[in-house]
Image (tube, rainbow, N blue to C red):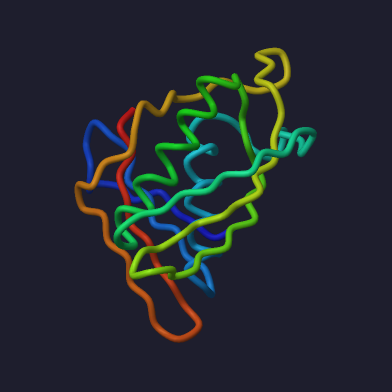
Length: 142
């Protein structure tokens, strides 16, 4: 798990920096961080898997659409997720993300309900890539 909560960047929201060796790993850790804001992800078992596919114009749009889709699935499926196998590829000048995500139905007796994430923001979103490292900074609306 490679992410940290950033203080003093967003006062009413939650700012996060997710890191990974690759863009895919950083996207996975960003998703995990978002669910960690909402619950203790160590208590979320991989009982149900879902496939997610997203196409976007650029990396920032892909990150926004990825986290927004996960929020949508949380609300519609009433699920928390804790494992994310992410693949990103470029097709016809667009980016395509395909992910298998794993989690379970939300159970208030099992899952501590922390802060609800309402959405993701483009505000201060930043993606930095260099060989062997990717950092993604983003803000969640809570």
